[in-house]
Image 1 (tube, rainbow, N blue to C red):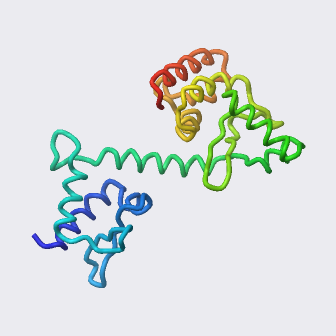
Image 2: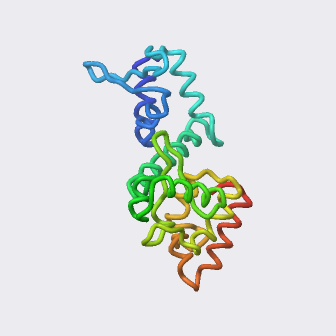
Image 3: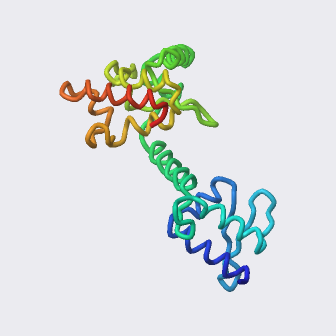
Length: 210
């Protein structure tokens, strides 16, 4: 079997799973095509094209999950791709930095930074660190920029358990199976479902993940 066949098989399979783009985003491999349209895989770290042996190793590794390896899905990669998509969706929602939250509160940036740092340390507020700034998702704030107590009741057990902030943000703002498809942040504000929402957050905190 020549390299083009192996490369094309990988390209077709991974494209069907929506993982080609994620491989490049994660700094692993990049799919390129030559002038004739043939697939070639490049190691992003070295810039070198993968030869036949490397391609076979990569395919074997990616197919090494599941009971039927020849049909298996690279589960960790699928999960990582899913998390990347969720993260992009979350960044498209409303959030604040110290500067923009200070403007909403009508306070100084220093005072806002102090208040946010304290609330985060007390697990009353979710702060999501990024390379550029700490993000404060808007779902947990009232109109004046203060933490909503009913939302803090859900955040507290999750944050105290050390659950990843991105995962907390995603769980709080997306339909949750444990709540029958309700969105936790919405359930927290409904007297009829608030207790169930807190119980769900506590259960997830005990598991240490969401």
